[in-house]
Amino acid sequence: MNDDISGWNDWEKVFSDWTDVSISELHGLMTGLMTVCHAPSKIEDWEQLLSELSFSIPNEAALTLLAEEAEDTAFQLKDKDDAYQYSPLVPDDEHDLYERVIALKQWANGFMTGFGVTDCTLSAEENVMFADLAKIGSIRIDPEDEFEGGEESYLYLYEFARMVPVSLAIRPRKSMMSLPLIAGLSVNAKTAKELEQEEVKPKPKLMPKPIPPVIDIMNQNNPS
Image 1 (cartoon, rainbow, N blue to C red):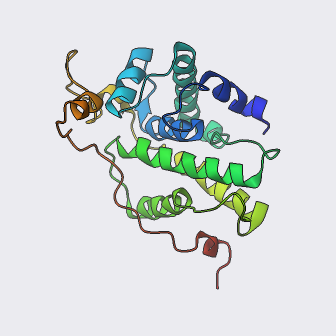
Image 2: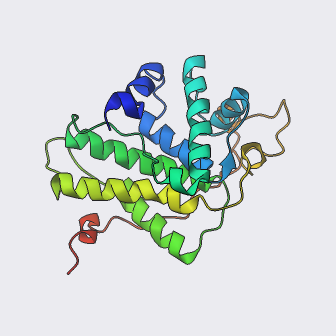
Image 3: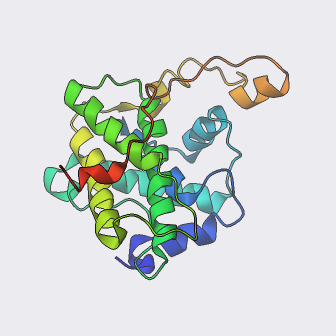
């Protein structure tokens, strides 16, 4: 899928002045949330969530794109047939393999964060799937190095990552604003970022369980 069809060019353009995380990581975070939550009806809900995650607020065009993409993703993942058409936001194959691998790594980390704040319990099988996704999120590669396994390994990892939200989006949906991360905050409640600026230790956020270190992810492709 080329960059125009996937939306990569649109995301790069509207998020060009927002550098808190990459667009792939933000897309992954949004997807993690939309596997469990209804898409928020107000842009202000995204502002509140991003603030509580200690992110700065993107411009209006970027927030609008995020909200629209979240609505489309939530709708897509609810439908069994449409869900299989879901794609992580990564650059197309005209980009260097290194750039695509790093984008997929960032998407995986964003997804784990987004799903982690939903406070959902994972089954034993889903825990195994998250452990494998964590290995993608822990990839180490230098621009000068060749990615072990090349294009074939990248496509294998991409397809695995793509199917994670499809596999997880089977739970009853809930409001994003009911999540423990932000539920109960009053209009005047301070965000974690504001508390940090006051040198007050913020309440720990709900994050995914500790992940194992990377142990040669390519072994998945080369069973002994």
